[in-house]
Image (cartoon, rainbow, N blue to C red; front, side, top):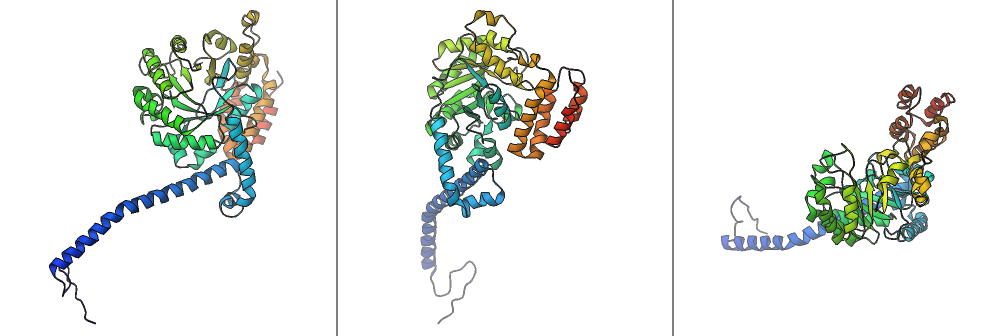
Amino acid sequence: MPVVKLHPGRPPEGISEGAATAASGIMQAHAKAIIPYARTFFCALFNIVLCIVRNFAYTSACFGSSRGEKCGLLFGNWNNKVPEAERIFSERMKHSASFNWQTTERPIVALAPMAGVTDASYRQIIKRLAPETIVYSEFLSTDAIHYGARKTMQMMHFDPDAERPFIVQIFGKEPENFLSAAKVIEDMGADGIDINMGCPAARVTSSCHGSALMRNPVLAAELVAATKQAVHIPVSVKTRLGWDSPEELIPFCQKLIEAGADALAIHGRTYRQKYSGTADWEPIYALKKEVSVPVIGNGDIFSAHDALEKIGNLDGVMIGRGTFGDPWLMKDVCDALRETKNEKLKMKNDFFTKERLSFQEKIPLILEHCALAVRLKGEKRGMLEMRKHLASYVKGFDGARDLRAKLVRVETFEDVQCILQEVPQS
């Protein structure tokens, strides 16, 4: 058999330049023809891997099992888990399908989503005090949900027996990620989805998230439309009076409603104000006159009297910072609004549970909050995150400063019990 000698830059001996050029052209043509198919193949492979990651993260969050059991869900023990997973999925979908902003009992009382605050333990404490409250998750990234980020998937975990109605709040700017994230949220059984268009934090607005969407109404409407396209559960929006001026509120919200928004929650400040000054509810009342969807007001509610005074023509109130250290406020507001038909009750100060209770009487709820945090997150992480809550609970009495100094250093549930046992009877 003859040996073909190869020389760099020249065709093999015995093969003409024309034949070599033709062969090279054929190979290049085949390569160009293959590229689109290769791209499609790798895109499909990426989506399959992404789906597996999402499902793994979601089952981890749902079942909260050990690492070995989590792996077993995918590779070994799945047959044992399928009936339970199907039951959970069926129950969640049945309940979430029953929530509707239009038919929810009025007046609506909602716990505002707060990053680092409204986790499952806090929501459950609120619901035990005021069961009619609609609770929201911390705000979660649609990008993180789209890619199945484990920490974010765990933050979506909720107790369907204790937390309904449960709304997941999301933020982002990519419509395709809103579409995929919304499907994940609906599948995990949430009662609704809320889109954050109000957070004024610089790290959020610098990426065109949160309040920054008020400057881009077209994109904001696209995000609502993409979310509505993906799910059957209600989609709401939480926003502010505007970027610079309250005059922006009505046209902006009308675009959101045209895109499919089922309800609106409005904080009574502009982006420029951040949390300074006083919340202005007048533009929110004006908005309600112009739209048919439920409108909920938010901002500067620190007592039941504030809620009664501010609700006006709105469908409800949303309370955030006022509950920090005072979860009893939600019960006070619910009780007061329920009795608004009784004019005499409006003039009384009957709805101030926090002031009526001594610190000793608050301790059982504080310990229950700690126990929930430990059960849901483990003792180390649970108690670390509870420190800020413990500091907020301890205010307004002699010795509170020294007690806070001890509580912000706790590492175990037993530490909290020992410290609180030393509190003298008031």
